[in-house]
Length: 204
Image (tube, rainbow, N blue to C red; front, side):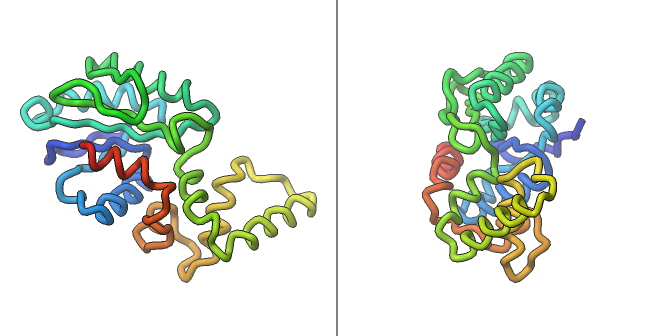
């Protein structure tokens, strides 16, 4: 289980893994909140309950933390993902939000955002694909995956992840992870695809 970092900020954003830490660090810098919100990776979704139990007894948590937001992927079922996070929050004796995407409770107030939009299946890569859907490279990405499918090669286990990596292969540095690509400016932050994320982060 990943160990939490030392708590240094009153506002804590918990995300899935190191790549997501880098991604949301880039987004926070873009909207000018990187100095006031600390990002922590809790690892995989099954590691969240244990992470939270340790997190709430960490030094500085009670004295310092006034807001906690959790971002996780819906995968195949947004409702089930939300219920899973709420279950982990309840076990850690934190406020359990009644709906995704809004803060509830006090000291700390808590919010859960299920990516891509709290209602459909998907993940962070889904949001990124929505942001670049009008990029000139995207028709090439779709043609590439269609060509691979016609070739008889085994299909990717996750089509959206494959599409994102194919898109990133069209950029000046083709070997970056999603978080690194965000930091490099390869996703257009002005896209409405990122609006829900931005609103939640600003509400912290």
